[in-house]
Length: 149
Image (cartoon, rainbow, N blue to C red; front, side, top):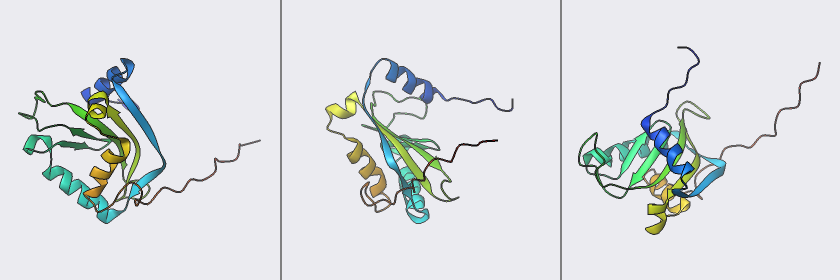
């Protein structure tokens, strides 16, 4: 139906994990990191080549990128693979071919293995030749003025 949101199993898993305090670190990236078109294309291609279903450790979908400690045994079975961290992203913003990274989360398993928000972002952005510190940032505009009649 129009106006209804759909949620994936991953969305519910993340909500449940946050409710039970399984995530140790969540950081909003301010200002948001913006992957330029060429870097965005490189990152998406490299993540596809490193997908958990093809022997890699990434699972990239529009909206979120997940980093696991090992590949999945099959498409529908993550086996014993542990989620180390995730990044929330928006495709096609601020322009059609750019990707905005606005939040990163490190799980307790990721923290135990030494992952940080910066190291997670750097691994992903490194696929496009960038780091979190070298990645262009979104322009922060002041909020709109209140509307008065």
